[in-house]
Image 1 (cartoon, rainbow, N blue to C red):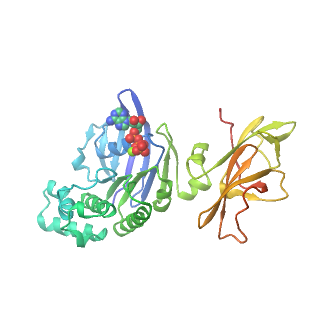
Image 2 (cartoon, protein in one colour):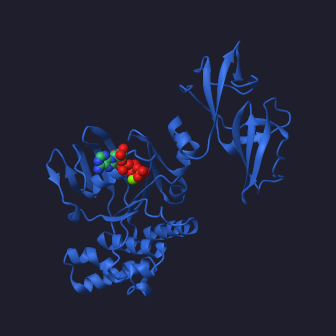
Image 3 (cartoon, protein in one colour):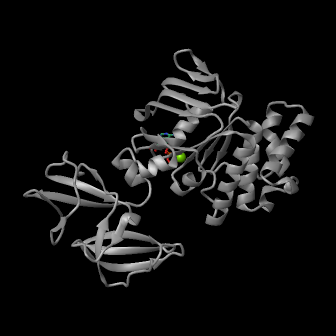
Length: 355
Ligand SMILES: Nc1ncnc2c1ncn2[C@@H]1O[C@H](COP(=O)(O)OP(=O)(O)OP(=O)(O)O)[C@@H](O)[C@H]1O
Ligand SMILES: [Mg+2]
């Protein structure tokens, strides 16, 4: 098996810099999710890996094999990089049967027929599509077509597969099933998968590691899902992953007050480094109701979502999101219109952002 290594990759479309000195290691036999806002350069990076974009600098390794190096003048053509691909909008060829679709990359490489059959059968087994070998894509559901695309990627390479938003077009239930399947295939074969998406839910379900890219195409953080959610490296990561509430606090004669229509005092501690203004961030499930708190709000709307209540609180003229697991002891929705006291657990502080 093989990992993927990007070192100091720079790439521009015309004068528009997309990636600059971008480095990332995807460990062998892991699923890494590359997550970032739309337009940040995820597909651009994938195209560099596949040999469809030529970087202006840097190196790319697949395992021990250098597939691109500006300095060493190496630029292996796409079909010889040995990387399987699943794209969102480049699914399967409509005029070929399932089996022909899966065999196509091997035919191009003139793989002997016996080996081709064996590999295709194995790949179809992995995605549970053996019974559909003779079907045309038009006779399959969206999820089945995507499974064929994954089988085709598997025969191109059982070492490294790149998936760029492979399941975005599927409905929620199928997406979940596909994620479980991708995970299972990865476990069975031990493939290294670079999974590109802006869907956080998908990455949480799937990844061993996550890499978060910001809108400038820079890496903000690499870590496990827990690292990223519990220990975000920056405000960008905190805001990008999950739902967050932010409050601006201002200092007045040694105390901190919430900015808003009626200045309420914040009774927790603010780190010393902040002097006059600070932004306090808190997750919806870290806001608890406490009648004795002087931080008061009013419940605008309460939504029951099965496993949790989602409440929207009017606080100082600002809408605040609070979540409560319905499995918590004594958890129940607070009535719309009622006044509540709020307490913030696990607050994070960042320099006040320019409005
Ligand atoms: N062929 C192209 N020519 C010029 N600019 C391009 C081209 N392809 C992409 N871009 C620009 O490069 C930037 C990065 O695009 P890219 O497709 O890599 O984003 P992305 O992170 O994959 O976004 P999404 O999550 O929406 O798929 C965008 O601003 C996009 O407009
Ligand atoms: Mg993209």
